[in-house]
Every structure is written in structure tokens, then in C-alpha cells.
Image 1 (cartoon, rainbow, N blue to C red):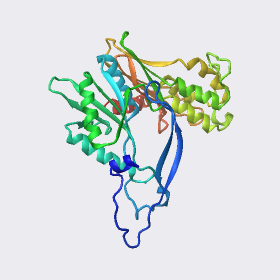
Image 2 (cartoon, one colour):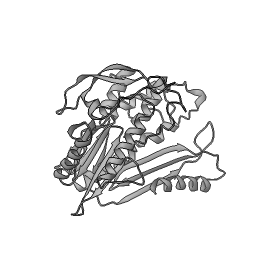
Image 3 (cartoon, one colour):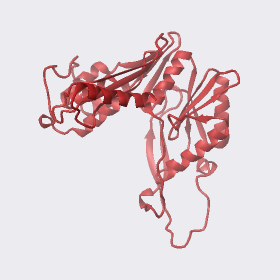
Image 4 (cartoon, rainbow, N blue to C red):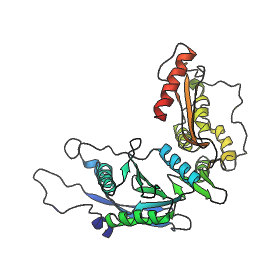
Length: 345
């Protein structure tokens, strides 16, 4: 309750005539801690019953941006290449479940950052950066109320933390080791940084009782050609796979050609040690793009696939069916190039 008051979550006002009060309720949850930083604990959240609000009467605009996953990976690549410090913060309390809460929170945070000489990225509205007098940069990424900040000098990070703590009720999580379910592993001696989802993979395997499955190197033999008519709809498993592709970019293409079946999960136990490596190589910013030859049996559309790397670190990728049926391979490749160029810009 103290942090709710400190963050100025609400003001006491008279109820306008003809308006209804949005009531609150308590939500209790066990929160996983951060190894070496915070122990697991039980949390009580005071949330608003936002479902009682009416569009056009109680609220209008609700859109609020969140940082792109490619921005997170790009920042991690920069951290590994330049051996930067990387730390994590969290806003302690905000009022949950109001329809416009995320938007109002972002507007307040954006106003604070821009007033403290940070610039907002034109590519991603949740990426902020500031150039210091010595030419170095301080970066901050925002995902709702979770933040990653990085700089060459720890003193610059402490300065940012102090500024944020003066305005918001903050929790300092120390060196970053997890973001959005992805583990951040740093090996400073080898100048390497890894992004892994081993914990999430184990959780999904337990969910579908596959934790004791015998691993196989190939989930389906290459000559099989499946269509949607041959595969049952297993949306829950498909959703888990799509989240896993946040880290494993080479699975994005496979998911379009392999219609999801339970036995496909047998390839995952082999993948629980797969990690995206970020490190120092000679390559600069490179993009790869291609289109397949109408291998989608259901709609006969071409597949667009691209991946972008910074110093051989994959930071952005996508594999998706094209929106129209093209009449030739060159046209399909032009469409793929257009998609990739938009991402590159």
C-alpha cells in the first residue's frame, strides 16, 4: 500500500454525478525469485476490476508499446561485443487491470526519460539511449514495468537507477540474468553471452508428460509431406512452440512445414541446451533472405524467411507464408526481399 501511494497511483476525488466506482480486489500469487538475488515469495496484488469499465464511457485509447524481442537481442549483442555492464530493474507497484493503465504508465515513464536527456529510438518506442560526454552510451529497454539498462561504466548505471528511484518505487535486481522467460548467461572471460530457454523447455515437457521421452535427432523424416487435413488441431502445443522460437530462430521455418504432433516434442530434449551465442567476431550487420518454392500444400503459397545478425549474433528473424499466391519464383523472392528490407530499415 505504501508503494501505491508513493507512485501516486490514485488521487482522492469526489465521485462525479452519474459515474460508477471501479472496485478493486486482491490477487494472491507465488512469484519465482531470481537466483542469487531474490528468494521466491508470496505476493498480494491490489487490482482494479477493469472488466466493469465501458469503452467510450470510462476509457478510449488503450494502446501501449512494449519492447520488441529483436531489440532485446540487439542490445545483448552490443553488450557482448563491447563488454558492457548489464543490469535489471523492476517497478514495485502499479495499479493492475485498468484498461488504460499500461498506456498511462508508459506516457508517464516516457515523459520522465525524455526530460532526463534520454532519446527515444525511432525504431522501437521502448528503447531509450543517452550519449555521455566521453562518447559512450547508456541504453534502457522497457517491457511494461521490467527494465534492462546497460553502459560501459557501472557508475552510469547507478546514476540512472538513482534518477528512477527518485521518481518511482523501484526494485534493483542487480546483474541481469533473466528477461521474459529467457535466461541470460554471461561468460566475461570468453567474451561471450548466451540467451537460453532451458527452463521454459523443461516446463513445457512436464506439461505434456514428455520429460522422460527418448530424444531423437529428427522429429519427422524428410520425405514426409503433411497438410493441415492430416493433422489434428493442437493449439496449446503450437502456442508453446511459437513462444520457444523467441530464442531458436531455426525452428521458425520448421514450424510451417511440420504440423504439430505430440511426437514432435521428442526433438526438444536434445534442444534443451541450445543457446543463442553473442560474442566478438569480424562480421558486421548482415541480413539473409530467401523464399521457398510453394511447399505449403494447403494454399500453395511461398514461404518468406529472413534472419539478421550483428557480428554473427542472430537478433531478428521470421518465417511466414506470403499473403498472396505469386506466379513465379522471382516475384516471390521480390516479396521476400521487400519484407526483409522493411525489417532492416
